[in-house]
Length: 503
Image (cartoon, rainbow, N blue to C red):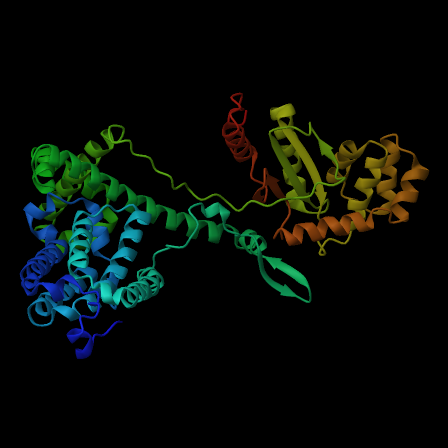
């Protein structure tokens, strides 16, 4: 800052830079007017829903923006307090006004960024930004340019982190949720990594249900916002408030006594206790059903106009977690470029696996070359014959008889080594070669790697199927199998699908 002493003044020294406030004391009047306009804008922002005139200028975005707060006070309240303070300073201490305008400008810049990021074009927020911009220009002091800039920047940075955190806004989250590393390490134990992917699969249906519940809450709220936005635009076209326009859509809605009686009949068990204790229950039900009908009529009207307003919904229903399986040298059926790959983790001694085997054969026959089927060994510790049987299956693969031999393993009650050798001979395999393979534990390491792969993927039950990365635990049945595979084909634009119902 530059200061001028009396000597400089007398000797004709260079005048310092001065602000418009120093040059013109009359500036207090425009400053006062601007501050009072800001007070009005702030109160309109806070009470627009109660003022039909103000509400007609604003959409649901104003309500969403109005919910944001700092230190548990809504921003419109802070705005009103700021403009009152600005008005007082305009009257008594104009030179100090810049010290509060610059911090306010930094905060307003944060709010504008949030408004853009969340796509909530609040009319009153824009009006407030304009008022503050005018106030900033008039109150600017050139002799304090660096101090003011630093102060505004300080408030901008502080509120850029504080406001999103306090209002639970994912302001710094990437726009594409899929870009986040949801399947990284959750923990390590002695160098072994436990992945989030493994947790997702192990939690299975419970986690999926929670994600579905969150999706349903979001989609329901989103639908309300979309309906409200369309009604707001339709009402403004006709010069009406939203309430007036909605009332015009539902004016003729009535509920008959027959509809009330039908509702009571359908919900008899829930209403039984109230039928004897609430004399006017039918009248209350009638009013409730009328309100429900009105809401449905308004919603249907808005949905019918979605195309006109180019409505696009980007959130999608959650799907079960996907995993990547290294197929390696596992036995496979079907072409490598098949649109759907099914990786089966199974145990030859597992009763559920044996029951699912005929269904698997039906599925493979139904989809033909659209399907690539991969078998991965997953003998459970509780089954004493499962590990040798897994090795025996791979020994049969050496002689090109894996799938035929698999049928025998699933159907025989005796999985002892002598009997498995006898089954191999029955299918025309070399007894010497097969016996050497089984007794020499040739594929022990490969079976162990397959088990480890299943564990890392979060799979802890047999049978488990990984269909194009989606984990399906247990035998899903023929219809469910077909439904999942048909959905995968549909996503890849393949029209030829297999009917869901089993023949």
